[in-house]
Structures are given as C-alpha cells and as structure tokens.
Length: 166
Image (cartoon, rainbow, N blue to C red; front, top):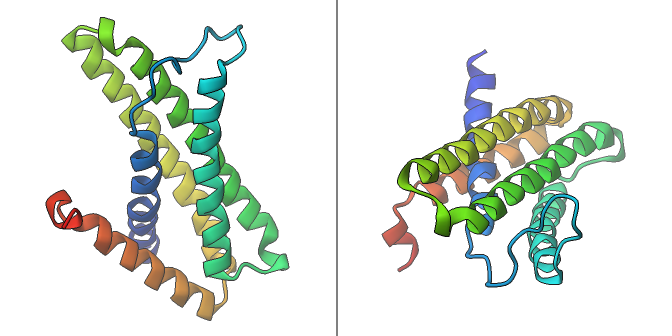
C-alpha cells in the first residue's frame, strides 16, 4: 500500500507540472475560444494543436524511455489516453479563463482558478490509476527505469523557480 501511495505521488510530480507549464503560456491575441457551436478560429486551432502536440511528444518520449513492449500495449494505451484527455480538458479550461479574464471580478477569477485546479487534480488522480496498471505490467528493469526517471523529474520540479532560471 505504501508503494502505491509513493508511486501516485511520483506520477503526480512528474506529470502534473509538464502540461501545466505548457498550458500556462499566454494565449496570443485573437485566439480566444469560440462559442461551443462555432468552429474554432485558426489561431485557436493552432494553439490547441501545440498543446496536443506537446502531450503527444511527452507520451512518445515516455514510451521510448520506459521501453514499452507490445504486450504492455493495452495498459500503455489506457495511460496515454488519460494523458490526452487531461491535456484537452485543461487546455479548454485555460482557454475559457483567458477569454474571460478581462471581465472577471476577483471572486470569479478565484473560482476559475479553483475550477482549473480541481480538473487538474482529478486528471492526475485518473492518471495515477492508469499508471498503476501500467507499472504493474512493467518488468523489473522497466520499473527501475521508471522510478529513476520519475525521481529525476520530481527533483527538477522541486527546485525553486529562481534556481531553475539560472
């Protein structure tokens, strides 16, 4: 039980920060989201493509670093799908926030941030569950590689922002 709790924390540390940093980038002027029934603007589609491309790059990199086998495909696919869904969900929320930020009062601003934080937390929880199933299917060598990779990422993310920019 302790191992799975530790694993969930490592998954959260590794995967939580990457998409947030990508999604927290400012949205260029003119790329505000359209109404749900309308087609997205070209700039919005391009920005979404960049977010999804970053998620796909992360997925591809992890697959290579963990040396996922054909037999591990179903567990990997489930994990990767949660990553994609999380990227889409948080991207949509960041876009909505960016579109509304100029008209939000302080309370609406805090509520918007809380909504993003809840979605992010829920997404990480789903990701940790999917990763547990994948981790259980890994060989000892793959588990060791995952543990090392996640520790390194957690250590990098634990550094204060000022130390990272030096």
